[in-house]
Length: 321
Image 1 (cartoon, helix red, strand yellow):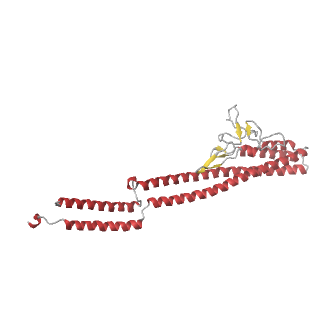
Image 2: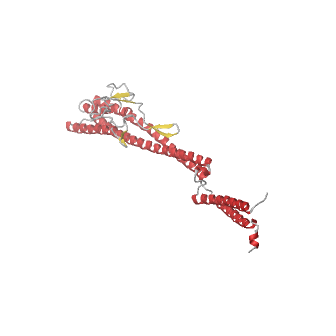
């Protein structure tokens, strides 16, 4: 087969372009610090990077959910601590009233303080976090208690009724198939007045609008007993102790969940770190290796240019000059 100058030049240009293309690709990898800039450069690597980025995004969302859940529970814990303080103060007053004799003026002062403590409990029952009521189950847009301490759960101008059940759980996703309950339904904290001390007021599973909160009723009974009814005050001390025990029990549950959230956040941080490292290995340029490859391709390209000048044989025109 006769080899013409055009064939030699064509092959030379083709090979030069191939070498130049590899040189350009490595140069782009170094300048962008990425192994590929478009999916067609490395379809498998690009697909893997997409999955890893999706995984990182999901993990970061789980972390935000865990932080939001923790904030909700901290707000609940603060409310329970405040309830505990109110109950402790009421218990101090009840013990004093049961053991000593006071003037009518002193009794009125104690009644006034008990009334203020009761109102403060109602305010705590309507505590909100980020605009959502924390004790009303699914009905986060509704108040738990009205101004008299009865369960509310309906709109301000509504004549309707509603129920609050103990299984109205608000959950946050904090992992794949992993959730955490963030809310504490008000029944577990404020109870329901059963008018029978033998029945646990915190075991009811649902309440209706206008049912009386046990916690509030204890303070009303305390107010009514102030005076000559020391026997009823003794009962009040027992009721207050029941409320304090229940408050501590609920706080313990929240504390356990918050410790779990701390561990979950640490785990998610670790997952983000390890997944980010995998992403970096998959798509980031190894600059040391790329620099060596760049130098090698530059040498190949220069050698190709030099060889190309030598393989093109002299023509008759060269001898006629």
